[in-house]
Length: 146
Image (cartoon, rainbow, N blue to C red; front, side):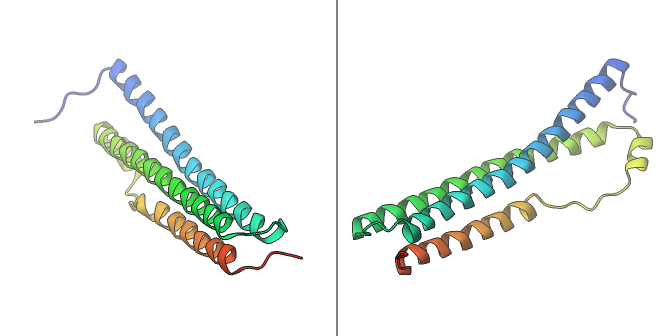
């Protein structure tokens, strides 16, 4: 038993939802990169404070700098995970939309290799983790300039 063809109003709704969903996906992916860049910038700034400030670095100051670095990395990683969840939701919506489109649309679209959203977020987490490790090493083992 086949599904009845959608009405013109339903086609318009599906098209609008498709456009919004693809725009959401592009926005969320862009936000992942921007967020990672800002997280790395925050870590670099913390390393710079230790390396170039010339201030007396007491154990208390060192603890605060390391705590702020870890907090910045954890917050960035958490926000990346939240964006990942939003991307997964939009991808599931697209799959439901594709199932509603005509056979002609699906033929024209062709088979696409599905790339997991994890393939984007895991490298970003990796870069963030390596950067945090380097920053902690610079904070703890580094010597201030001068």
